[in-house]
Length: 145
Image (cartoon, rainbow, N blue to C red; front, top):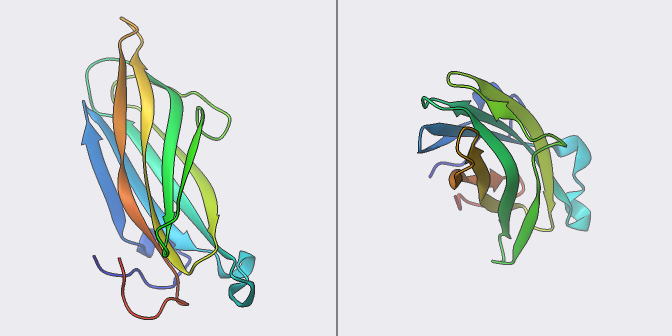
């Protein structure tokens, strides 16, 4: 995988996409140099997620689980209700976009996860994969991800 440029324009960053049961999850990342302090081992990224319902039935996102791994292989598991304080309901053809962020103690890492969703007409629960995406900074020597 190629390392993204140290540019903060998310439109210029590589995208990561995964589709599960008609739900497309796309992620773009960017390094936040102004919120990072490399000399203190503090590196911050933002990620923009678009969740699009390409299926034929209405779905709702109830919970999320993230696995955040730094360059030393340490993994943190984060589980919570919804995303950015919401549990969006998506009719067929609709999408929901949000931006969030994460800090690491190393200049690179990666994230992956799962959205726990339901079909609103039947209540059937299912998981939607969030693609693995890299968190790279200009402070990481070489190309890791």
